[in-house]
Length: 216
Ligand SMILES: C[S@@+](CC[C@H](N)C(=O)[O-])C[C@H]1O[C@@H](n2cnc3c(N)ncnc32)[C@H](O)[C@@H]1O
Image (tube, helix red, strand yellow):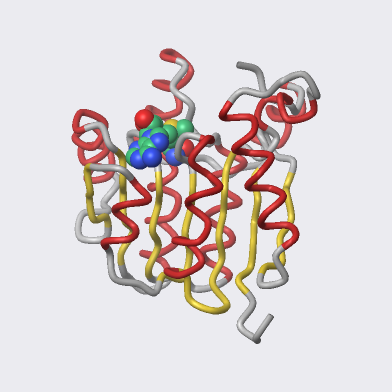
């Protein structure tokens, strides 16, 4: 699937992300070769920026793949003084692969690994979290929101990938479960007075949402 944002814009934005460690570059090369849907450099940098800005120490990631997005959060948490980043994916093999990459990057002791369904894993893990990142299957986005809202601390930040969903959300004839999931999730979070949110049009659209600390 192609991104809603033209390639030349993505490449332009990626070109301003400072050089990454060799291991992270190897993860990017792996995605280019296999087509595995990682976040990409400019979106990774945005995640890192937000996590540094709010001084996040506890991050829960939903749908972590082989740990590319996790690496950006782990870097922020390490620089913020240490803490935990939960890596959650339902595929044992991807979890093993992530462990290898993230250990090579020096994030042993920060990343906690869970193999299983991510919304259920979040339900079962004690909060609160400073930051939650959501990149699971898109049809599951709407049902994940109440669990996220419960586990995020007031003043915490939610980041969600793929809100432009390869342009399929603009296609009035597209009613796949994933497209409808993205549409419904977007409607829910942008109309809920408990959140302040913005969709940043990097690559496939990254939502950044602040959970208000004052009563809605
Ligand atoms: C888009 S990829 C993740 C990429 C990763 N966030 C990154 O940018 O490097 C999503 C991954 O999460 C897994 N996944 C999707 N829905 C999930 C769910 N509900 N629970 C656990 N894993 C899930 C997929 O199988 C895939 O490996």
